[in-house]
Amino acid sequence: NIITSIFVSDAIDVAHRDFDLSMRAQIENSRKAVKELTRIFGDMDVAKQDIITSEMLEKAMQNNQVRAQFGLLGLEITDAVAFFQVLDVDGTGQVDASEFVMGCLRLKGHTTLIDVEVTVAEIKMLLKQALAEQRRPEMPPSMLQQVSFVASSSLA
Image (cartoon, rainbow, N blue to C red; front, side, top):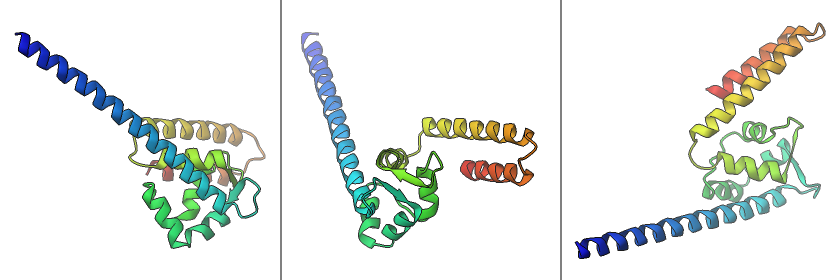
């Protein structure tokens, strides 16, 4: 019994150390990704205004080295315009460094249930806004169709 308890105790200690090492590695990988994404953003921001536009992203994505950098970070970008629209959460047509880095980190890797739930919540909010706007007489009916199309595209 004593040998078994020592073995179990040692196994628990090793498991805790493995978990700690895994967490440290994950934190370090996240730091490296933030640093690399910040650098990529700076390279795309040729005007040095701390923002990028869809056109800037499209131009950068024509460079194979930039595509490879995104690929190494787990971001396979096939449509620069659609990718930019996902990053541009406030719809201004411009993405600042924070939006860029956080958006890329959110899209990096596997989609989780939390990501899906956040997307569903955002779509519900957009639909509520669209319905409220529809009740206003100056809103053209085509606007609701556009919002519905965007929502259905996001769910697909």
